[in-house]
Amino acid sequence: MAKRIFQNPTWTPTATADNTAMANSVYMAIEASGATAGLNVIEIYEGGQATASSVNIMVFARSLVFGSIPTALATPVGDGPMDTRTAALAAVPVTYVQAGTGPSRTNTALTARLNLSFNAFGGIVRWVAAPGEEWGITGVTVSVSGSTLSAFTGGSVGLMGAHIVYEPF
Image (cartoon, rainbow, N blue to C red; front, side, top):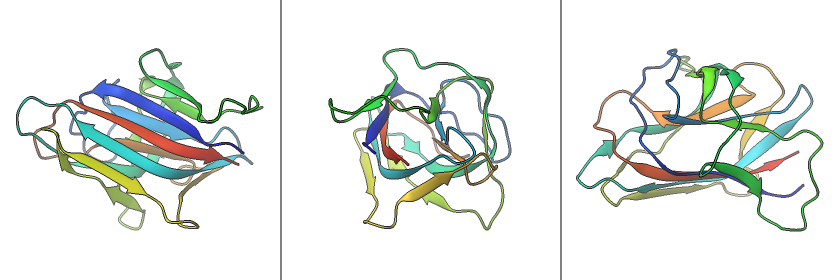
């Protein structure tokens, strides 16, 4: 399969507690396309665009509840293959920043999370998985088949841009 990039060039996250539906346009959500489908997240990048010091307590975490009726992506947000020779996928993973009801992060202490906090006043975070240590998303079962990049409670969120590089399987 070919690697893809889900990107949102400029957005302001909102600090949201676990197990709470997120408002539209304050998260980036990615889910598997079906029961036998999956993907590996290879890289997450965040770049600060705030005009003053602002701590974004960002986490990439499993979803406790999926977003209902995800809205199709609209520019400038996008999701596409990195290689121009990539054939169209039969079932494209679901990526979105808006939904009828937003997704919510898991509140389970035994579920993996990546802490990607940074100062949005020009700070950057780039998480890259070592080979064989990619973040896996599989099937349609809650807590393993969807994840979000979003702000946790606390801090003072600021404008940022982000991308998620992943590979469907």
